[in-house]
Image (cartoon, rainbow, N blue to C red; front, side, top):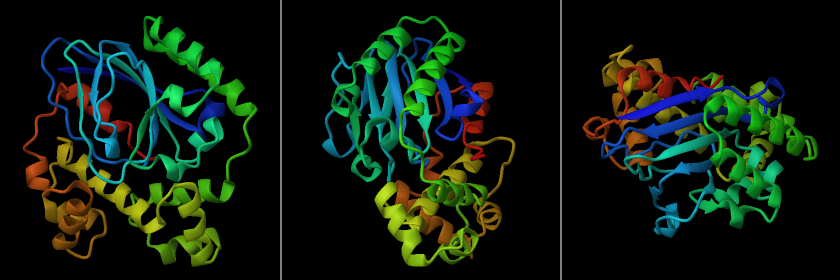
Length: 282
């Protein structure tokens, strides 16, 4: 089983970083090999053992010598399998943050995973990687990351306040907000909204909202606190009917919800709750 622990970043970082989360295997062979796109790019650090993960479109698995990397926006499901005794730290970023940290347009990272050396020549990230890997617990790691990102982001250009607000409107609606509804919320033209999303996130607001909606669907399917059937989930997420939900889910995941539910999830019940709660999209 996988053990899971999450920690919030410093309050001044909460417009850039969603959370830090630590995942650790207990020695058993893991089967968490199918991840749902969630709208967040991520940094990762391998603290122990190696990682079995394809480089998305590259189709090549990570070298056992890679210690950290950057995962861009995923537009479809991808495989990920920790080794039995692996220990990994993830930094869940808001979609505009990679550009501020690395100067890489977010759309260039869509469906891509790269090691830190390819993401930046900044040696401070290499030093950070070493410090994180030598730390004992999540509290120590979070303190290191807070100090690092507070300094690094103070030197970065400011985030696009329009995009920040627009993305948070999509989060607040669990992806149900239409493009027309979004333009009314942000007081901008449809053309401008679509242009900013394409430039900064690499996809249209409609596609981004679809990803959030499908992610919420997957959460309801896994969460024992809800136990909704497909029809009830469709109603909760404002789908016209069940068939529209099924169409969206298959478009992103390449499979039906019933097939998705047949997979093994490598978390205990309590850790599954913590794992799911990181996507409250607040």
